[in-house]
Length: 451
Image (cartoon, rainbow, N blue to C red; front, side, top):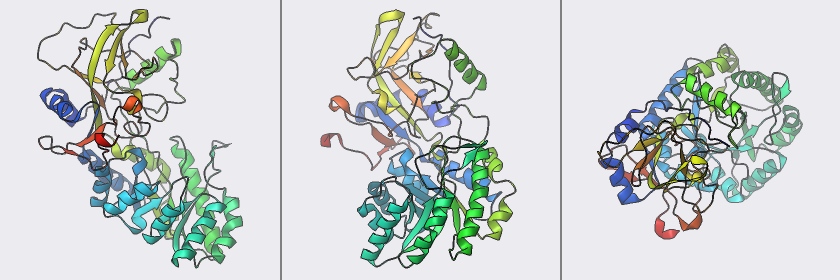
């Protein structure tokens, strides 16, 4: 089968990434000191994203709280920045909870939404006055049991599901239906000495503003029922899943899928890929969800909470790796093997649909790549399937061993969610470059000696 024609997917402009790509000596020095691959982290865009999200929410509701979803990136620098910016965090494990506490976060600035909550996690959450989001009756029982042992009341929210989008129930394995929660309400109120029900939580898959708006309206009715029965709900948490855009050109995005429909790439489909180009801005998305609902929140004295991860990390990270070899392969391809493996830049599904940036290691002028050149990037695992991209990459000049490949905008779900260190290769170090002249390793790092 002939190679898919090269269709560019150009990254949006990120000033600090542009600066690095134009100064080869700097990333070359970092790779020499910290090895390849290397994750580069910048907290200033993260802080700016928090400001912009808060500004957008303030125009739509009286009271809101943002909780950064730590699962999107394990680096501690973002948790510390969240604490400094006055927002909270969403944690899914005891390790994440301990990181949050060590970063100065306590109480309702921590929301615990993990799918599997160990007794240690529940106990620590109760001790720290964190909000525990319960998913089912068995978790109610676990939380009540640990509360009794500690002789301290747990703060509780309940995850609700079973909402619809355009008349079809949104499939999910998480949460309970509104009717099921109503059936469990008496049990929770009878145990109010041990658990205090403070909020309703939902998190919808996909990126439909309409579905979130309808879920909110249904949740208002549920709040009314609970409070009329003696409850005291003070917040609704709409989770995350806020869109961001990686690409600067909608035309390139559409052209890529048109080519892919003609000659499909294995494992790459529109249904499983993140929408890397988004025409809807974050303020526009929130406006679609919340416009006209301020009164509903105000009448019930409710706070709006949300738990974005990826969108807060927009433009806050990149990954760099050294080119190890460039050689002919079958089907007329040129195989570019890099000192990284595919899991270290791969999201939860699909692949990174943003073109990498080639940073030549020298200033020697190079001839442009031939028109029919087809560069395919692979990782260092001893497997034919350790591809970095299933699609050919349209480099303008041929890469050479020793060059650097920069993968832009990898902070949200690309760096850490699937990373592995097979063959004994260490995980990538996480380098905070808020001051590029004085970078520092993030304290979440696992030292190479321990692997």
